[in-house]
Structures are given as structure tokens and as C-alpha cells.
Image 1 (tube, rainbow, N blue to C red):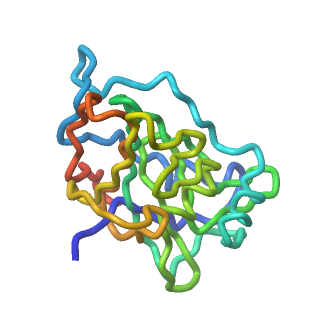
Image 2: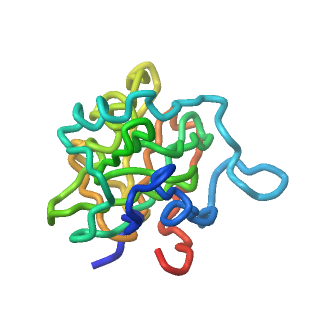
Length: 202
């Protein structure tokens, strides 16, 4: 089975949740992108969806527990790319991490690379919908957060470069999988990445 871009860290929560121990994932390198800047990186969207201020509340909304340490029974990583109107939207750091309470969700990010860490104390299936709810950018067949389909706007989902149908929230996060969410009009061309250049150790 192909690995998905979801990584789960093994560090115990201390200080700032030992973000550097598991979360200093190196910058991703996508195979291609439609709009690129002078240094050949994807053009960044002006749209900003920050990590929620209350990570514990959003994790609860996703139906997930907050943990005192990163789980080790299931420890994988997936990678998420989000494109809106042809430009890349940053997946923020510290989704699913509550620094004030020193707690962490089984689904979380440490940095802005798009790497989603899946670190659970039990074996279970985790979904894109759960992660997007933690981010407070819920996804459905006709909406990406506040953005709705219709009026020339479309929402497409890709796993390892191949478009998938059905409920995007139900997409399972697997080891080293590349998941791409593409919203916009057909005129906003996006070359969807089929894989992620994983740093050694992830």
C-alpha cells in the first residue's frame, strides 16, 4: 500500500510540546504546481485560515481525544495540499496542539509544511474530515470552510494525484499519502502533486 503523507511524532509533551522533536519537518517539494513564483515555488494564496485558538474545542468537535503525549501504537504521516483559485493555501502549524493545556490530538501539525502527523495510542482510521474540523475549515461535497461550490466554483479531491469521488470528509489518512484539495473555477489550472518529497525519518 502506498504510504500517505501523515506523520505521527513520538515525542512526549514537555515545554512547548516538544514541537521541534517531531515537528521540524523540512519543507515539502511538490511535483508541479500551476502558478509558480520566481523561485519555482507555488504561488501563495492571500487567503489565511489560521490554527484555531482553542485546539481542544476543535479536537472535541472532530470527535477525537486530547492526549498528554503523542501516541505510538499508530504513528504515520500524510501530506495535505490545499489550492484555492489556483494558489496554495498554507496549512498552519499547531493544528490539534493545545499549548496552554499541554495536550495534543492524535491528528496534528507541527509546522507549515502540510505534513499531518497521525500519532495514536490505539489503531484506528482517521479521516480528512476530522483533520479539517480540527482546523475549523470543515469540508463536504459542496463546501470548503466558508467557500461554497456553484456559480462556476468547483471542489475536487485527489489522493496520490488521482481524483476521488464521494464525500471528501470520509477520505482516510494513510501513511505517506498525498492529499490535494482543489477549489475554484476550471480556469484556475492546478497541476496536482502525485507525491510528496518526504524528509528522511518521516
